[in-house]
Structure formats: structure tokens, C-alpha cells
Length: 117
Image (cartoon, rainbow, N blue to C red; front, side, top):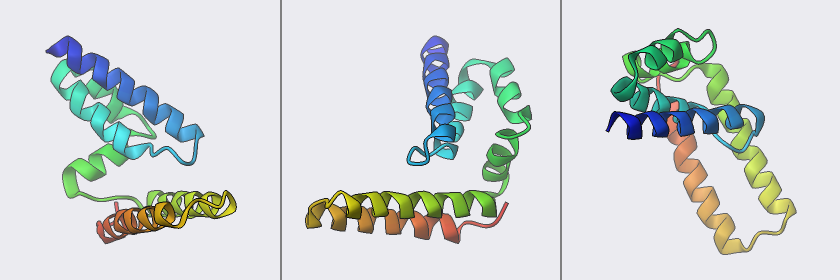
């Protein structure tokens, strides 16, 4: 199972790194998933991730306090606004837009009700 967890951790890390560049792909959830998989497969990679100057503090905030940093909350809000804006510009059907709005509203409520990291 360690090999499976390692592969899933590497895939999660790759998706997180792509999420850094693409505003519509979330980074932090993939980092948390990566930390989960690395904790079960590789002490060395798990330690590297937690000690990383950019990613480590986000993961530690979540693991210790269930907290999300204010800058991450703002970035998530901007991403959600961008998704809705693109959907409006592309004239997405109303029922799809409604599903997006309900889902993204729930995500925003969850994010903004977490403590600040």
C-alpha cells in the first residue's frame, strides 16, 4: 500500500503545483491530500512538505487548528468570482449556473467560517 499512497501523493502534489499556476484549480486541498498520502508512504517526503517554506505553514495551520490563512481565503474568493464571471460571459445554461452558485456558495461559507491561520 505504501507504493499506492506514494503514487497518489505525487499525483496530488502535481495537481497542487498546477493549481498554483491556474486560478481555477485549488492548491490547498491537493496539498492536504498530498500530506495525507505522504504521511502513510514516505517520512522523508512528508517531512519535506511540512518543512516547505510556502506549503508547510498552510498544512500545519489546517492540521493543528483547522485554520485557513486570510490571504488564502481572499484568493479562494477571487477564484470563485472568476469562475462565476467566466460562466456568465460564456452564457452557461441557467440550471448549470444555479448549481455552480449553490456549490460555490457552500464552499465560500465553509472557507470563511474557518479560523484564521
